[in-house]
Length: 234
View (cartoon, rainbow, N blue to C red):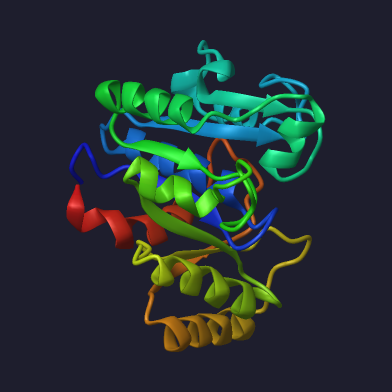
């Protein structure tokens, strides 16, 4: 990967596994001797970046290289209500300034590689009155990687996400299925979902991330989808 090949983790919907995929990417690139940086431009549903529901707090807690670092460095905007960013900000009488997000992303890009940005919600949630989350991908010049559920319902959500990106001429790096439910998705269903997504979109499903018991030390199998996508471009 080149320094400018930064990654934007997008999800098919809320709770699809974006933060888990972001953590795996950070661990993966650290393991390759790179210097990645996790950036959550907008966090909603949290009092502050140290909240137990903070995605940045989750990432920092499970990454040894970040043990003495401040999670607030990875969050630009944080709002209390668990809503789309525009409405969460409006509830507090605040505004989200895209220029500020771009400036911080550029600053991190000068120091780290790659920068891994994580979306808030799905692609078409409003960030400002006029801009959607998908607009941030184009404005930051990043490459999207889709986190999708492994189980029932993922075909429709994933194909709609791919279609939204393709209509903007933003080809995704691929799809990673995340099995984050209470029980493991049957292998037959994972295979069928993979087949349907690839046939319906011509975007490759890199693989599935199974249930993780210890996020600080996930099974090596969790990194296989990432190796498929990034291994040849290190």
